[in-house]
Image 1 (tube, rainbow, N blue to C red):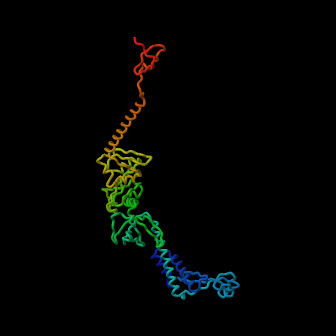
Image 2: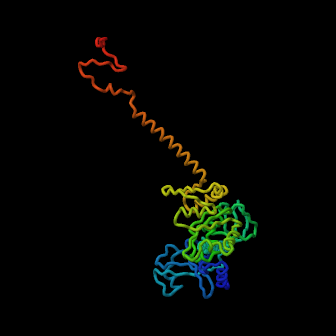
Image 3: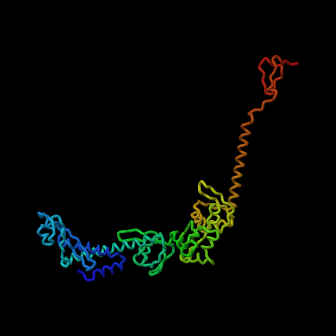
Length: 406
């Protein structure tokens, strides 16, 4: 049917990265569809490929029966034995159909099916390749902006970086080279969709893996990352080897390693923090370079109140609260920073209120304990019956009982 078709199939599979069996199956399906349009949809048709000759053929199968009810799918024993002398009732015999007379429309249909199958197989190959690279940093070439989304050429396909995954204030031109983190790979009706990111905190981790051998080998672990893309990032590191300084390993000689990461992120500031099991010590490290006087920890609410000198307050909080915000994300606790003077004033006010409250309570207790009228001791002593006595002050005697004058 087609000269050197086997060589063409092998070449096409090599260019597209597709298994040649996928292309052969696509051609078979296309020939079957074209033959049904030419010879009828009720026929039992099957396409076959001979790898030795490199030819395709279409066979029409019929069942050998005594009485033919459907000429499209059945034949008599005599007709069968004319094709195969050993044919018997119940056998299925295939008759070769000409593929040269399929017609122009059938040929176009076959071509469309072949192209669609090859395209689907190519998409599957691309998806399989990039789903295995999810979580890696790759290189690409900027193609264009579409509704603020950055479209990047990845070679075999295109990837997308939406505005939420871009670093603020970063702008690219066409043909600019870009490095980005593969955040997700999904299947769609238009093929695999690759989502790239430069703002994801995991990109920091991957960049340090590329620049710091100790991180790549697992000697130094990055346990936590807090990032405000384009402005500042804090990472917490810990060493598995006592002889290896985790902070020094990430910084590098004269800051060479961390500077490589900063340049890739176009000047984003990176703070490398030593991780500590004690949350209070960890917070003190995270708020550096600010000096910490003391830390009040509330484990029930996962909150900390950090006391700093008054001159260190702005440094601890950072520009627009950036330093304390990132430290809170890094540690996983809610952090509140106060100046030492503010705390002392608050304590004095609290002590003053407590003292006033205590004095008020004491006066109330004294008033409740004192009697309403003082009673003289003499009034409390009983008067003997029959004795004449002078009435006490404030006491009135009944009439007729007044004492006689002497």
